[in-house]
Image (cartoon, rainbow, N blue to C red; front, side, top):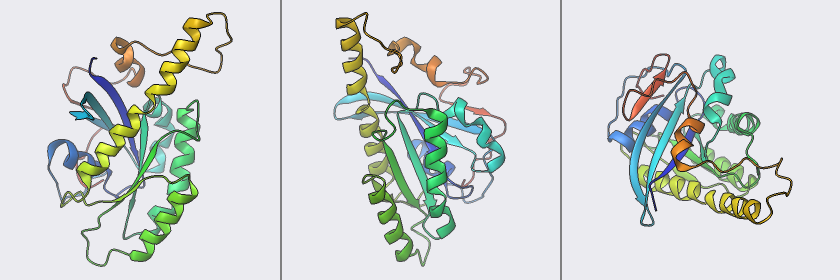
Length: 232
């Protein structure tokens, strides 16, 4: 079985640590200087999940409202959505509803209720990280169908590997329904199929995932606009 490409989108308010989480997982690096991501950027990492080789394509999107109109190009084809909040800032937790709703509206997954989300409460290394925020985050996750929640630190790498391993594993779970749909269409070729997107071949997955404006000549990483690799 060939290597599976998984597209993961990271969303959350500006400054919660999206870029730092991605850089810590992929490059094992942390930069304390903060510069906002402009547009979107992605990194890739190869790993094995339960013995299966996968390539994670992790998209870091700008948290500023003026870039949210770009969402449909970046969300399309995602296998999992990661929602990030700052464990020291209650307002960023309150924003998760709008980020989740925006993703579902723009990405349009065939089964919104079953689509995998993972929540990361970042910056737990900061002294005085709020227990009250954690309690509200747990309640939010339970209310959305028991969404997995990790308390993380991009600075000290707390729970980074564990979180992204679960993200990859949950992304792979999306394959089973797709295989069943493909098998059903093969068995009943004249059955209505307007509610499902045909399963693309592995060779065309990258074309499905990437907007036309991205320059793919850069191996492993690419960006739209200007990337400021700080704590965003």
